Length: 63
Image 1 (tube, rainbow, N blue to C red):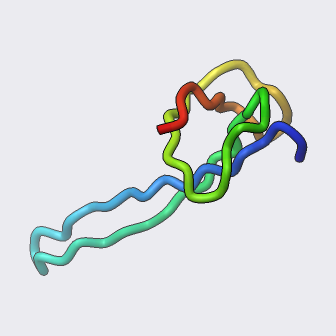
Image 2 (image 1 turned 135 degrees about the horizontal axis):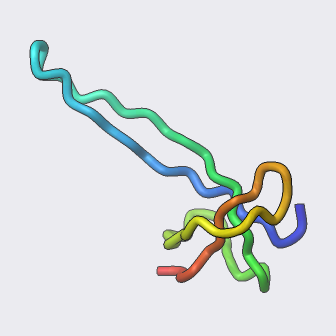
């Protein structure tokens, strides 16, 4: 998986009846052209043309 970063995105929603917040995570495989991403980096990703069977995202900016 050279030039690939796995980005975990946290989504949440609130149950209005029980007033509880639920979290779930989704993983995206993103193309990192120069292998600059490290673990625990915050990044911006953008949907783009498919690079492989599972990789449809591209890293735009590392925060």
